[in-house]
Length: 188
Image (tube, rainbow, N blue to C red; front, side, top):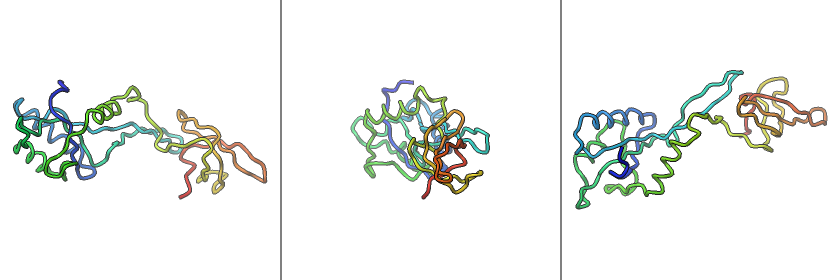
């Protein structure tokens, strides 16, 4: 698809309605002629993996919940809003409105669009990230197992297996303990 046509705009939706709004716009794109002015709808997502009780599950999480990105020609050549398109987008069930500029939405800059597209179509697209990001040296509380309610410092992180190696103080000695991600939590 020709990425030179149109400008990218951010549309605010009700949380959880992003896919429904995208589908409505996509159906309209297919039904209308090339003159309609909407070219693409994007909902940036990432795959997130989580290990629970020994089972690894992968889910898809939206990068910007409550927002979709639409590439369209919202303005005519004389810089006036294309009324038909403006009202079509705003009247879709689940749409709150355009972001930036109030009654005259401001399109995303080229740099913002490049970052957005790079992020949504990156080389690690198929590689799932852990749901909770831990850091070496971080102190966590053990929520399950023989050492429940003990605190430990993270020494190693194995994202592939969903395991952490903690150093836990037991009887005054620092002892290594290997646990799964779901067995530990951060103190709030």
